[in-house]
Length: 331
Image 1 (cartoon, one colour):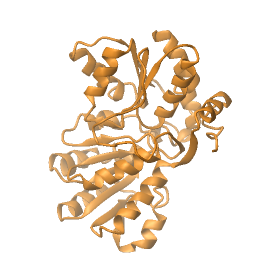
Image 2 (tube, rainbow, N blue to C red):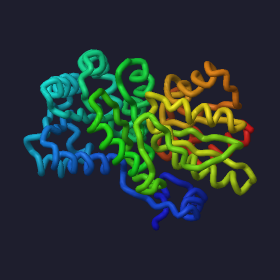
Image 3 (cartoon, rainbow, N blue to C red):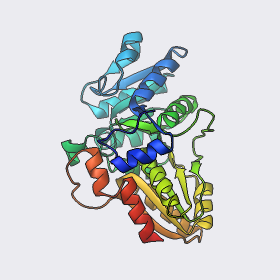
């Protein structure tokens, strides 16, 4: 088994992953493209609509196998969503694929009106989300998408944490007759689920049990939660790790269990601290009258630092070492 890439994980984190028997897989985006291709081989109603994203969306094999099932609209995200909605309205199973930063900003009105309010089952696929574009800077970061889409009714939001969750999420989305937002980064992922793990939209996955501290993560942050929990166990702390792959609807059952059974809850996300997973969890706990010690680990309200995804993660404590530090602070 190979250790996580040095650029994303510290030497200590790589050693921890190796000790857990974890292996590096492919990027979630590559797994998405492969899964979409496999689905299209048995369902010819599937169409991919892209905004100059055939390459970045890893859709080369799909376009070669089904050239008549890929629609390229160019750099025109509003048209992308409108075209996808029109095709879906006429019975096609459409996937609108574009960088998350542009899909959920430039085309937000079309998402709201043409897809969600009209109840058209488009699968919106935000690629290179969060800070995946790294040094390209704030204009290319997608740190707002969970917040704006959570505020729009009639859409599911799914952020897979590894290749298993990605494959299962894409398959579940294909069977769902409603609007869905799938959020993917572009880094290779560490696989920590086995093939028998149950996956259901709206139901979080408890990866590791624990009663001292609960890490509730989503997407590419979950592996850092898992590594931090493993290290904290060596210090005598029993840490729960939950993959909240569905941000909307939130699995309040898993959240409330963590809040009642653990002394502290830490949410971790590759998103603004405003309007994302952390605020959703905090509001739900407060309204339910559950009051563990609570901390949101996310990107604060400031000019985001420039650098690689790994640099930005480390700067904002979204790393094994950073989460260990915050765990001690909270407890």
